[in-house]
Image (cartoon, rainbow, N blue to C red; front, side, top):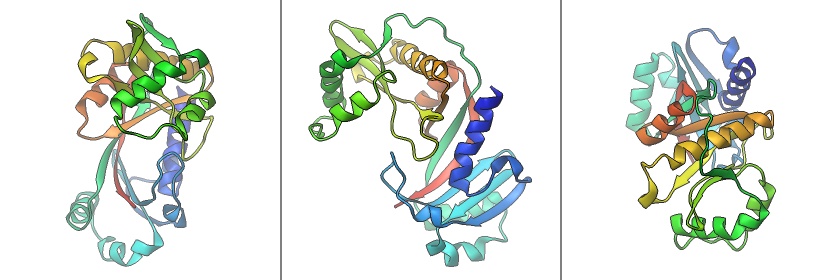
Length: 239
């Protein structure tokens, strides 16, 4: 768990442009050209990334936003975020840190293999109707063999955890994406599938990572039920 904490800090330090663990409590402003880069796996730029953790608030911003941020540097964290939300459409995210496995039984959940691709493709098309798959989905699935977990019943997949590309620290830390068919929710399938995904990552020496929109109470509750705790809140301006 010490290694999990270190990797989680290091992962979000990339977004902040500074070592989170080395920062003193209070407000920190960091102008970073890194905020102008399109993030792998996310497909967008984080022009502004504000992390709030305990008594620490770090605002990392693109040089293009320097003129907007400068007048707000005298603000405290609450006033700063309030003013940002007034001027920009920020996405509020809840960031989680893994604290230890709490689920040891995965009845019905399994790690998917190559032969399961047709089932995964059918599942994907069900949850993303009309989405294009012919130019990337197969390659993505095969590249991540051993990372996908799913709950299978009646010859189809009901809940699936995937492994999106990571913007930083690929191979050291891994976000878990979870999707469950609308008609199959609240049956415990997602919990078992996500717990197995977490266990599989740990067995590979990879730090599990979870984040979701701050108002997604179902996702937050699921994460907590399999061993995650709240790490920080992030306010993000995407481009």
